[in-house]
Amino acid sequence: MKDSVKAAEQTPPAQRSTRDLARAAVSGWLGTAMEFMDFQLYSLAAAIVFNRLFFPDVSPAIGLIAAMGTYGVGYVARLAGAVYFGRMGDRIGRKKVLYITVLLMGASTTLIGALPTYATIGIAAPVLLVVLRLAQGFGAGAEIAGATVMLAEYAPTRRRGLVSSLVSLGTNSGTLAASGLWAILLAVLSEEQLLSWGWRLPFLLSFGLMIFAVWMRRGLKESPVFENRADVVDGVALDRDEVETAIATTDDDRQGDVLAAGIRQRKGKAFFLALGLRFGQAGNSGLIQTFLVGYLATNLAVDRSVPTDAIVYGSLLGFATVPVVGIIGDRFGRRPVYLVLTALTAVLAFPVMLLITSGSTAGVMLGMVLGLNVGVLGLFSLESVTMAELFGSRTRFTQLALAKELGGILATAIGPVLAATLTAVTGSWWPIAAMLVVYSLITFVSAYLAPETRGRDLVRLEDAA
Image (cartoon, rainbow, N blue to C red; front, side):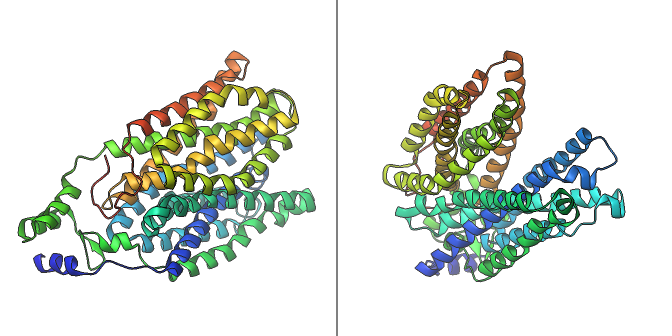
């Protein structure tokens, strides 16, 4: 053990070329795009056709509930995947896990498109659908966290915010691609064609994207940060007992201090700070991108295409917002930008909701585009790098994946239900604005309490807080 640690100490720092960085960036963007495309394809199919294809023997309302239930189980699987693959990524490396997750997501999505329906095999059809949905979610639970970790650990220190923000762009790409595919199908196919074979096309077409993503990741080199970790020997992280033995036997006091800092620090503070940072972005997203579309159509009789188009336009603008926020974070630091964006979202919450509920198409468009870019995508860009910098390299993948998924489930799952309840009880839109303020203030406080992480050495084993 002593000789192994010494050998690790003498290994020169891992070097990566610009080409390696470009490949990592494309790989991270592509995997995240694939994750969000797969989930959006499924959510749209669940809302449009799955109730009739897989649950035809129940009433339409119950069939829709069942179809959306199969959508929901994916989020449970995401949490399990975050823990399982996060720990694996911290133990054996980021590259291997990212290869597995993209393969698992892609294969599950493709197989959904090949499933026989209830009319062919009966109850086995929805059972298989749930199984594939669980597998898809299990892989997706660590995908965006793994891509975030890999890009942050690859990026040059001065450009870490910009490079890491490319993961956020994958969310826009995937959502737009899935929405575009379904829009084309609904426009060109009859209902009979859509139900007989058309619904399969988006899922089967994702096979090509999976092959490209797998090819990209086969040639991807391991994270230089993982290779330079003091507790990694021969490509595998030492467990706690092995690290304690290495500390006791090493002749290098500095090396012993580095190892001790990584395993003896009390965990928890950085995780809860990250959870708070995640809460605002995920909560605002659930309200603006999910709840408001249905609320405007149902309660205010606004044509559903208006808020849907607003989300599309806001996502397109996000291709500029996300990298710009990344650049600003590199220039001024993470905390001040977080504080400005969350304060701005809280201040604008009521004026933005006045615009959205004005009944004017222009008002809906402007309000939703503004809310999406300031309160969701801007925060997402910052989140991609800040959460990676908050955690030490020994547990970065696990803690980041768990914070993202747990925060997403709590804020996104509870938010729309609570908003629906409060708007029904009050008969007004003001609870939505109030929730935007609360979510944003949670992230504001978390950012205020968090240390500035810009420029932090990501090889350090301990958390920043």
